[in-house]
Length: 358
Ligand SMILES: C[S@@+](CC[C@H](N)C(=O)[O-])C[C@H]1O[C@@H](n2cnc3c(N)ncnc32)[C@H](O)[C@@H]1O
Image (cartoon, rainbow, N blue to C red):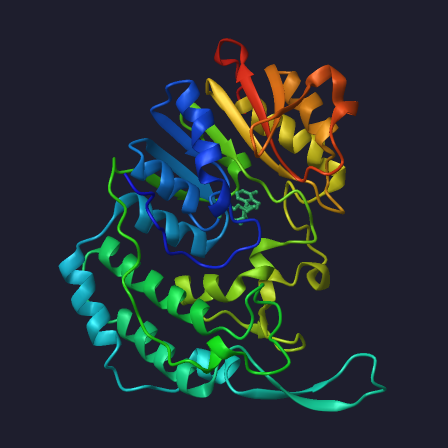
């Protein structure tokens, strides 16, 4: 059977290219149930569902909650198709996106002795007006929640496809890029077949995680990539709460995610001070046969892979496997890790489903 092609947003750390590798770890233990603790774009959850697993997923962010619900709950095709057709014919309007994220903005260019230039914001005015019309329209339609979620996901995807940067939503490119000049079009999100699953939203540390055969954890590991800052616009379009914005950044950001300015902590898993305890508690608390952690070797990681293996080894038998499924090391011989390898899986087979109560 050909692999399901899942349409989802651009995301740093997306595991699109590793789906089959990840699933093999579950297949080896004949798993039927899966927990995806940091679900991000939802692509891992979607893939597992399409392969017949029952998935429970979680993420902190509003947009990830939306993607996961659509992928794991599905939607009625006819209903969503007709709503999306309507979205493509609506009269464009000036709204929250047009006001805050469209056209150009005069900016002082760093390192130029105060030179001011006109720089693009996130969207062309024409595209922002269509996005506003579609998103406002969805506040008025009376359709079941899962169908509305699918249509809102379609707006997030459409916005992502014409956003003037492919990397993150903290800034916009110097010039309008090709994709930003295209006319925005609303399309159906991927409809995934398989057992219905559940998506949760919140700090995974606070979650009452279900007992599963296989748990997959793909945490951030570095405060260099703060997901709520990197993809704030997806979250704003998903929730449509129109949060107060701080306009001092290259692109306005919701005030509540200006962590440094607010003197707030960015949350667990991002901080060196608490990482060991956060990871140990989480890994210990999940009731599963096998737990796999993805690990990308990047500068400024809060934990080294050696530290992660030490933590996992507290709860069972642990090994590190590279993306081509070479076993790099056993836990007691960490020095053998090749410095050229960047993507790892830490595979933990728990002792008699050992788990700690939170
Ligand atoms: C590396 S990304 C996951 C990518 C995902 N596996 C994919 O392929 O799309 C890490 C995710 O962790 C989420 N996250 C960060 N801190 C979290 C927390 N305390 N609880 C739950 N999710 C969290 C972020 O919102 C982000 O989506």
